[in-house]
Image (cartoon, rainbow, N blue to C red; front, side, top):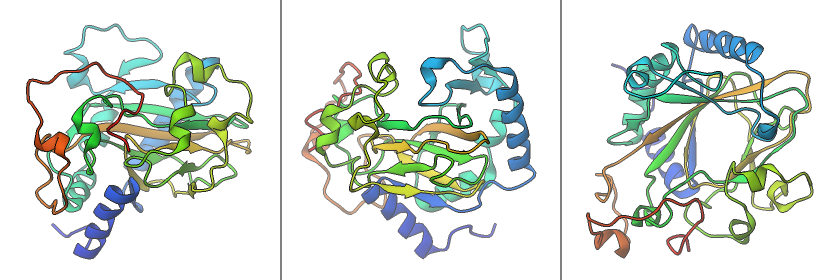
Length: 282
């Protein structure tokens, strides 16, 4: 099997993920699977109305692999259902290979994807981070413990609502952290003022325009947002959450310091989940 990334590319991508909170592998999702996902996601949005409360996210549709759905006690509806196509992206061999080359050990897919689509002329997505375990020592890890793997179904630019990120905010607190309501909750969804800080043009933010089929991998703790869609065409994203590494063990390639909270971790420790960054984010 030929490598997708040479050793220098793999090392640079891994270091970018650790230090900046994200990395990109260009053109990983190729036809015919890319075309299949483009057509399938368009059919979904042709038939499923988007709830107005998701106007900033664009949508919130969760699609599961049949193998995980059959273990769930759930009835399908327009926002939660199973489809065999999800297994094709979760099990996509080039994706697994590139993750291995990046050193993303013990990758644990959740066996579902989230369809996020910003409609024509849709508003911006607010600044937020998606980590939900801030009271746990894993929040102090300098390496990622939860990541998303995402592909856009069309090329993205600032004009049609590309991703934007604030590099390093997965490991460093900034003032913006302390003014953000919980991601995707009722408080943040109810904000109607586009001049609110949740939409601010932060001086440290960078745009992340991507080509359809590019893989972006990001730490769940990273602050990210998206520009409004100022075009007449829908802009769709396919996102899959994964756990990674075997906490509290650091990655096999880790040579940096291991935080005290992790060195002294008690396996019996439990805590309530929260989206609020804790003292572990300094």
